[in-house]
Length: 159
Image (cartoon, rainbow, N blue to C red; front, side, top):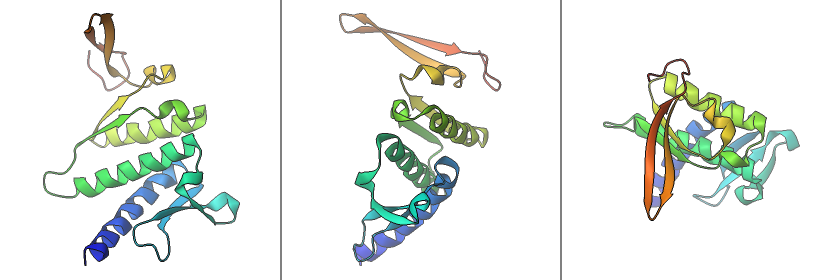
């Protein structure tokens, strides 16, 4: 019974994730592996709908699929009482080519415009231009750091 309930939840998660993949990486679609209750595979639309294991994805592809799954999980939780209103994403942006980075950031900006709070932890310089409010942590040595809150003047931010 537990596997059945988990498979229903996984189907719902994959549905949400695939909607996000339509924006992030149209090339891919996620589905469960036939005969393996909770395993996931990728359908590669540009390779004649070839089914691939998630382990075969490159770093950038894996990041986009992982982001779609995280956004799908967030969408599921947002639909529940006391759902998730804030989403934090830790790194991974450095594995993206410039076009994929732009697509990922546009998706996150759309979530923010829809009222969701999105926090990103990154060391990618290209992201500085797109993120209006920033918290920077600068190591000072001896176990101490300086925390600065900055506003870059991007529309919609306050200084």
